Image (cartoon, rainbow, N blue to C red):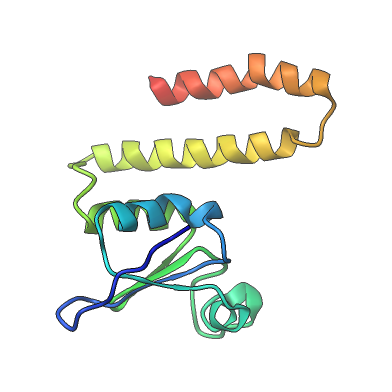
Length: 144
């Protein structure tokens, strides 16, 4: 379960738009919680639809949740939101080209998660092959 902290007038307003679960917003929400950053979670469809173009919002560049509004900045996509939150909270210490390496690893993990999801309904033999072959390659790449 998530806990929420009160926003003070001195802080920029932080709002996370995501369904009533952690899911793809999990990493960002856990960083907010860890650093005790005040934020509001909006999980109602009408709120998400007001900002996500996948659900009818006009004039926005945020397709679908997770969508984070931090002050005047609005960011969508799990990897981008996580990197943004990590930067704002001082969690990441990346400098120069290391930022791009961090982005690469973030996208690798997102691709890996998609690969895992795509194997969830496959026969056991396919899952075993994935875990012993493709999964091992993914993890070797991330650990390098």
